[in-house]
Image (spheres, rainbow, N blue to C red):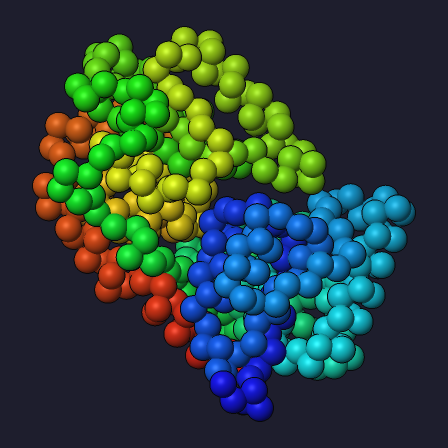
Length: 390
């Protein structure tokens, strides 16, 4: 390794539990050319994400900065903690020969303002979800002065951002996330279905599932209502929802959303038909166990789990929201339904079960291999780093 050629990149992370955004960064730092780039992952506490990064042999720094909602900064105590966190980040970055900063949160960008301006460090900002108006305004203001390159995870996100901001269009580019097609693979002949055994789902029942943590826009209620409609016509179905409730201490609406989902589950009398499973690390095996994978999100930027399902060869039914139509063409790699329309979702799942995966699985797998592989993703981001250093 030629240490003299290494470029130090600091990744600033506000959350330590694993979701799609976190796995995107994990895949990136795992695949980076370590002869050329030296990643440092910065967190504000321990958790699954820093643990996984350390196992890759990548440097991790735990610093004292907060994770708070932007509107809470009007509280003096919170503002003081943000200011203190900004100083901690500034001291570490200034003393670590950081040449590039990669972040994906407006709060992190705000805390980085002093060190970025003082040391003229180029920033790559990764936009991974749709921003509400106050976040857009603050992001626009900060980015004009601080951000050299904006990467969006989908064209839908890019178009939304450009139409709602000023002077940023020339800095923005879409780079699709990538996945490891060795880890996410199609089911082998004779492969044991351990998940069905765990859930005690008999062979004659079809298993329909969604995999998403409890974000308010993930479509849990639409999924439950569609399940209730399907069960009226077909009792040989079982449904599973995989995903935990994370970051509830910071993002307060998540608790109310979770409670609403649980109340709906009970009111629809789905307790014996829909199983909830918290966070799991065996997502590849879970995907291969499903007869249909459903992504019912209401405003989805572009779900990493969709790429994973495509690579796994499971039949897909997904909402026509956000960046999802950029992943699959209706009837070609999967089926699309009208967002938030539980009746149409139920009809589309029924059609998917009747038609099976003939032709769809192979087409979806090939598209992932050709367009959405992790090696392509890493190569494109590395190219952006090189341009930023010119």
